[in-house]
Image: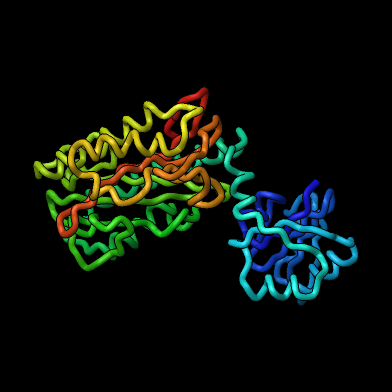
Amino acid sequence: MENFILTNENAIYYECGFSCDNVIFLNLGKEKFFITDARYTIEAKEYAKKCEVIETGNLVQTAIEILEKNKIKKINFDPNDFTYSMHQSLTSKLKTKFIEKPNFSKLKRIIKSDEEIKYLKKASMLGKDGFKNLAKYLRKNGLNQKENFLHFKAVEKMSNTGKLDLSFDPIFAINENAAKPHALPTNKKLKLHDLLLVDAGVKYKRYCSDRTCTAYVDFETLNFKREQTFKNKKHQEIYDLVYKAQLKAITKAKVGMKASQIDKLARDVIEKAGYGKYFVHSTGHGVGLDIHEFPNINSRSDVIIENNMVFTIEPGIYLPNEFGVRIEDTVVMKNGKAEIL
């Protein structure tokens, strides 16, 4: 059994089914310690599984004492998970050797269990409901409303009026603002025939959904379905191209491929049409307890795709000062192929 130390909330949740914003988690062989302060001990004792909950006013000192008491010679840690000051406080007083293992928790979580896939599927379905509710609101009340107000409504509708946590702050972008992949909302007003990009997701049992829809704005028929008909010819041309790239990557993605080959499937379509330089990000990323997990679906990734990996496929074209189109679905690899969650 390996020894490791964690402070990342989702990594700790994965180990014991509970987490909070002030905890050090030690896995020492078969023993596990959940070290936290008095604000969290009642819930930790109720929800944290198969670990000893220790209440303390000084997490680092208590962790040092446990490591010394157990005569731990080596322990793995993720350097992305620790502040410099916490690392210094731990290592300066201990003989224990701290071994850097970058992203070891995310690597452990790269292949999802069937139960995790159920949660991710449920999150995706709840996210789909959120998009439907947002579309309904926009048809009725969206005309001439400002982006920043409609961004607030996206938060409200996606979260089912606060019943669900969001995976991330939604992106709600009209026309030229949609040319910024992570657009911040502005005072721009929503009008008939606009192009609208919405990227949003919700959580179910802490597992995230992630979806981006680009839509034609018609206040009678506005929806976030994949078949979209735009009045503007260039909007339609770019939309159809991005959708073609996305469908190619989804239908041709296979277990045994490298992640970079899936990226290439989408990128080739866009490059052949002459828009390669306007596809400015990777084709996708893993999704789980974190909104960005492994595998990374980009041109540099040699990760071999396996069954039960879950990731997004989200090509985009962004034409500065004009508009942008991104189409994103989260897929799970099942029986060798990609299935949209």
